[in-house]
Length: 431
Ligand code: IMP
Image (cartoon, rainbow, N blue to C red; front, side, top):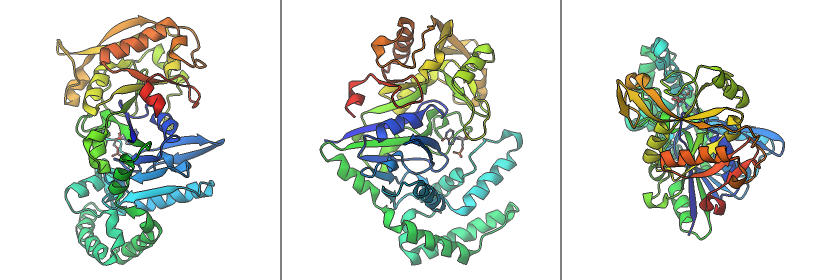
């Protein structure tokens, strides 16, 4: 029987998912993206070169790995073509990539509308990536969107495009934005169909075939993080999909019982970029120390990330909702040298102890963290190869997180390099 592993972010994104996904993608026969689109982004170091991926799965560097962009994604065909060209320019020419015929398509106006909706929000903007992800998902659920498979039937596509453009051009005009010329869009998308057509197929069929094969390893690659989940995150400061293992069956087209091994990626502390409540946020010298040691600056904007202690309220919540069976605890080495380390076990909200994050950001902003404090460790742990070699206080910190969250730590990351990864869980060692 196949082995499956789901990797998801469990905080507010930027947890170090890229490193862990690449680590397991090298061993996988198939890598499947199941939600989100080109709002995700991570850099991969490979043979001394740096590559960046947005919507293409992380197994693309291995010629024998089948990469799938699943039906739960929103796919921008224009940006897939650009991404593929960039990879080819960097010498990545031998790869296998398939795109679901049922995946929603991101059209050129979706990015315009994303920008316009944000502009209307004034200082209450979400801070989206402006890739049109929200508007594309809106069209999918309002049943007016186009899908990748439509590109394979020119007459059908022409009609669907026409119907969609009548509505969208009206909306663009109302917002004072330029409308699109039907013939030009049709022609461009037929060109894209010629390039991507051979890759568009029933990917659910391909995944199900692999699931039933002996010894196949299938990695399901999540994007964003659970606190950005449209249902369970800090709404409205969220993305428009569900970055949870619960998304895999729907977004890949498989049965739920195949999902049994879910790795939740979490930093050993917490960070958040941009707006939105962050109960364990630190404003003191410790925040600066962690920020400098962890290079906690946004990769695109260079903005300093907000820093906080490990939030076990968030961890318990996301592990339960997303079905996390083990943690990948990232940037653990960054905590070395602190006199004491804290873990938030509960919040206090209006004089009462709460166990889970409240649903509104107004209440979450009033939550005060309740901490336990543990002795820190001074040793540099970045060269350590096994859990047993860790200083006792570092071990105690890991064990405390396991105890409070009820989920074992399966992977410890003690540095950016692949070799600085300690695999603890036997299930993960086998993958
Ligand atoms: P959208 O997904 O572009 O609609 O953006 C909605 C929110 O999700 C914004 O706060 C983005 O910064 C955040 N976001 C989207 N994708 C990612 C990601 O891959 N990592 C971290 N944050 C993300």
